[in-house]
Every structure is written in C-alpha cells, then in structure tokens.
Amino acid sequence: MVDHTVRSFDADLETLDRHISEMGGIAEKMLSDAMDALATMNIELAQKVIETDLRMDALQRTVEDLAVRTIARRQPVAIDLRDTVGVIRISADLERIGDQAKNIAKRAAKIAGEARLPRAIVGLKSMHDMAANQLKDVLDAFAQRDPDAAKAVWRRDAELDALEDAVFRDLLTFMMEDPRNITFCTHLLFCAKNLERVGDHATNIAETVYYIVTAQNLPGEERPRGYDATALA
Amino acid sequence: MVDHTVRSFDADLETLDRHISEMGGIAEKMLSDAMDALATMNIELAQKVIETDLRMDALQRTVEDLAVRTIARRQPVAIDLRDTVGVIRISADLERIGDQAKNIAKRAAKIAGEARLPRAIVGLKSMHDMAANQLKDVLDAFAQRDPDAAKAVWRRDAELDALEDAVFRDLLTFMMEDPRNITFCTHLLFCAKNLERVGDHATNIAETVYYIVTAQNLPGEERPRGYDATALA
Image (cartoon, one colour):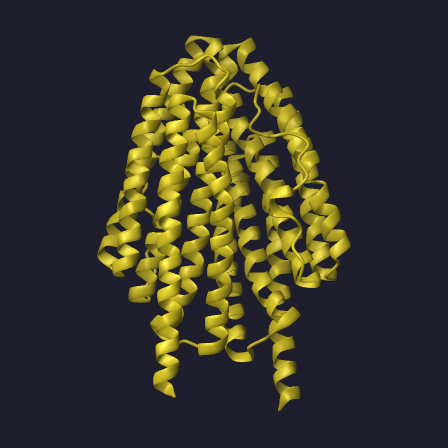
C-alpha cells in the first residue's frame, strides 16, 4: 500500500515535470517569436504569440490543480513537499515569462506603423540572447534538480540588469537626438523592461530549484546587482 | 473528531484571512506613500516603502506555507478548497502590488535630482486614486466573499486602462515639446505602467473572489478593455 502510494506520487511528479518542460519550451518559443516579430514588423507572428499565451495560462491552471490535488491526496513531506509546491511557483514564473513575450508581441504589432530606427533594436536582441540563455539554463537546472547550476543562473542576473541599463541609456539618447524617435523608442523601452523581467523570473526559478534541492534559500533581496535598472540617466 | 477538524480548519482560514487583510492594508499604505514620495521628492519616505516590501514578501511566504499545510492536513473540498487555494493567489497578487509600489518608490528616489514638471504628475495622481479605490473595493469584496462586488471591480478595470492611455499621450507630448523633459517623463511612464499593473492585480483578485464563491470563472481574457494600454500614439 505504501509502495502503491509512493508510485502514485512519483507518477504525479513526473506529470508535473512534463508540464513544466512543456511550459518552458513554449515560453522560449514565444520570446524568440516576439523578438522576430519586433525586428521584422511581422504582425501575424505577433498575433500568434499573443494567442499562444492562452495555452500558457491553461497549463499553469493544470499544474496548480494537479499539485494541489497531489498535496491533499499524498500529503508529501520534506523534499517531496518542496518539489510539489515548487512546481506551482515555477509554473507561475513561466506563465509570467509568457506574459512578457505577449507584451513584446503587442508592441511589435503597434510599432509596425511607426518610423523605425533599426540600430535601436540591436541592444534588445542582445538582451533577448542573454535572457533566453538564462531561461534555458534554469530549465535544465530544474530538470536535473541541480542546485549549483541554479546558483550559476542566479549569479548572472546582474549581467542582464547591466545590459538593460546600457540599452536604456542608448534609447534615451536616440529620443533626445530627434523627437521623431520618441514614440518608437518608448515602445522599445518597455520591451527592454519586459526582457529584464524575463531574467528576473529565471532568477526566481533558480531560487525555487535551489530551495527544492537544498531546503535553503538563496538570499532573495541580496541578489547580485551590478546596476540598478531604474537608474536611467 | 469531525467537529474538531472543522473547527481547526475554520481557525486556519481565519488566520489566512487576517494575513490577507494585513497585506491589503500594507499594500494600500505602500502605494500612497510611494505616490507622496514621488510628488514631494521625499527620498526617506521612498526608502521606507522599499524596506516595507520585505514585510510583504515574508507575509506571502507565511500565507503560502499555512495554506499548503492546511490543504495537506485538512484535505478541504469544494468551497473550502477554493478558498484555501484562493488566498495563495490573492497573497501573490498583493505581494506584486507591493512590488509596483516599491518600483514607484525607487523611481521617486532617482527622480529627486531631475528637473521636474509638476503638471506631468497630475495624471498619475488620478491613476493612483482610481487604483487605490479598486484595491480597497476588492479587499472588501474578499472580506465579505461578495461576488457581485468583485464583479463590479472587475468591470471597472477598463476605466484605469483608458486613463493610463491618456496619461501616456500627455507624457509623450511633454517629451516631444522639450527634450529636457525626456528623462523625467520616462520615469513617469514607468510609474503609470506600475499603477496600471496595480489595477490588473486588483482585477485578478476580483476574479479569484468570484471563483471562490461561485466556482465559476469570470472570462479572464475577455476582461472589458476600453483601450489597449500599449497604444501609445
């Protein structure tokens, strides 16, 4: 009987892991599609990203429902409880990464009619590369339950913040150079903020993975920060 | 024995309700303090808001821990289960409202050295009034478990979005009028976005309250929206 319960619990955890993996893959695709839509002013691709977000919302609800039922039925303790609660948190962060991609896609659709400034998008692409790497690495750290890999992701968050700071300065400079750049660059300021938030969510996931495996918290508010992203000028 | 379990469950729910009420009060205070700090360039007040956010993070963890233990121990069903999971969601939304207030406070601290444009802050104050009302009303709706009051909050979200749209247009106009306004107004653009997000979280809480009481979803993605806040120009 105990054995049966253990196996049922493992089956629940495997299902939860599969959902997290699916959400992670969708989030990565939404982000790269949103960036492509922004760079190429592809309204259809932007629309596809916006629609995909509904799938993320549904998956998050599925994960939450299954995890809550698992807690009620199996009454897990220790690492099993941390794991089950952890996937609820991770699915919430992944859903919010989907929201950030959706926000970028919405701006890509709006921006399509504006005067463009291609050099203004270069920095955003670098931010996306860095954020996408962070996301990929933290999903691997979760799949492997590897606290060292999670900590490495967590440490690198400062680099994305520093890059955002540089991108903000550049965008402000373009705006000051020519008022006709203001509308376009304002959209991009918000896209930069969205990408920085993706990094924050990857860092949250890193903290959750570290906690699941070690039962210790990485020091949340003491997150290494090279720059304060609100320092615009 | 059943009676004892029921009473223990009720005691857990009462504790959770008290925590939500405390988080709600702190969130309201953080928001109004952050706006005061912004309007009066009060760096100390801004710092106080930033520090208070740690209390919100701790309260959210407390709520999540107690709710998870309640689910494991009492195995609630139906409205009791919806209520216990609902408070986890509501505490997450309140914690994120605290984050928005913290973001405004951080900008208030940065902005203190910049050339000011007092008329640019007027629209933000209106946004804060509206967001604070939404927050107050949805906290009351939760305390009363009143689905009609929750639905009324949910319907009003479009008004805040419309106001944000007007504030964005004004800020862009100030930026185009004089490049010296660009840095200051860019900070305010992000504050306006923070206030709009407060409204979104109030709306999320309204959806949760409605779901707790009725077991029905308000149509999430069909939220009434007068304007799309990403439509800057």
